[in-house]
Image (cartoon, rainbow, N blue to C red; front, side, top):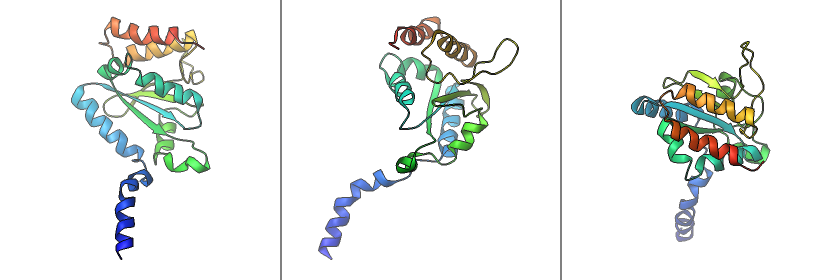
Length: 177
């Protein structure tokens, strides 16, 4: 009996590791509440552990020069989708349905800006002058992809200060390919 209690006490700190991530609806409900309270748009990006460009996007959004500027105007949310067998438990339940709802898939990472109610404003598929959506830009690294990303930010945060926008744009343009 003492051995069993000791084992349970020793394993207790690790039980959180095994817990499933929150469902997409729960994550987005919290994001909507924050977006309403803070008068912001929601930036939701979809990624997977096997996706190199997703890791690059995650790292970019966490940079000390980018994160505070980005979070000043947006409520960022990440949802995990399309995991392989061994990492399937990392997925947010219902995230695949949200990915389709906002215009994906089309490769990862895929992202969309939503209003405070959760309605799609724009996604990572650029729209031509004729109104035709192109392919997913994924991580914005090419000049035209960066242009679309900047246009998306301007559209979803119309009061974004030009110096703040320049911080993000300049960092994207300065990156190594």
